[in-house]
Image (cartoon, rainbow, N blue to C red; front, side, top):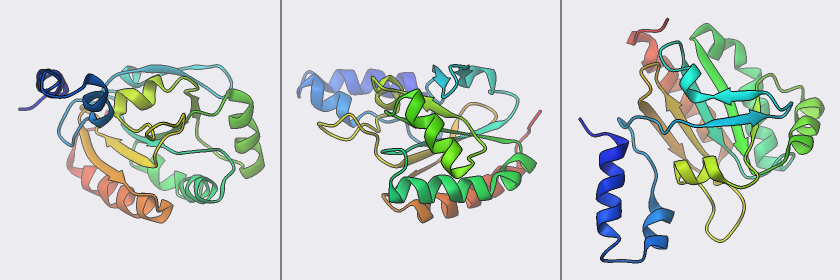
Length: 181
């Protein structure tokens, strides 16, 4: 079975043939790989760690470009409106962008969002998942459904926020047969 570490070793070996910057820009864990573990802080400064959710529940980790913009607001509000469905299926939702805590707090308050937004102003989480927009301090709209076993079960990479919700709902339904806490 492939692991993200095996994938990384292969990618770094390829760096001899091309520039390291090009390889790193193209790194992104794939379906079936262990999700890269990370720890960050939410809009209120609370620590949030992916590792603490592994073995307990699935995680919908979604990256988005910018708080309070048309597409990002549509995506966040659609997730907010389906949160009870995600919770019933033991799925923790967490959003990530380059925006700071103050921006996240305003965004959450304005739209009554019911899930945490992680602060990633330096793009460390974005880079770990290979979702940084080229030459920008901004995430691409990419969602990862991480199963309770810590493996990536589904990835949606589309600029269309409606596609993310539709695909993630279908992927979450597929998780029903997997063991949760």
